[in-house]
Image (cartoon, rainbow, N blue to C red; front, side):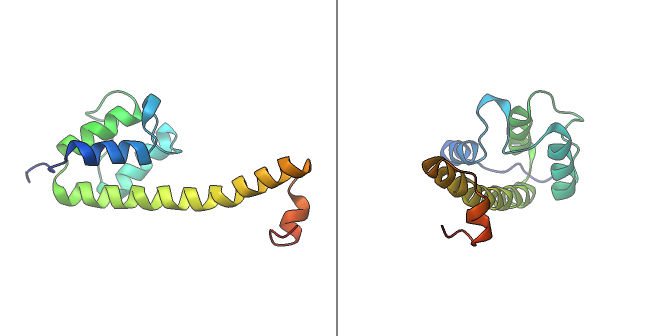
Length: 115
């Protein structure tokens, strides 16, 4: 077995913040989508051999994975984080605009985001 990944406390803290791991959650994953994501990424079933919340399981994986598997999983999770932020950004803007105007977002969507 390859040696486990060397992770600094600072890196773990940054990843925990980015992946919104407080309260046991990880990003927008359900238990099923988390398991599927991990299996697809690194071919490990996170619910076999690991216990706890999604955040706890991810921390355990970080401890057990070698550098290559850790890097692959982390890069794919960062890509999901980025995609979520980009998608949420347009919805968040629309919601803020609608609240300010006191209307829904339908006219904004029809005009390509222009009011």
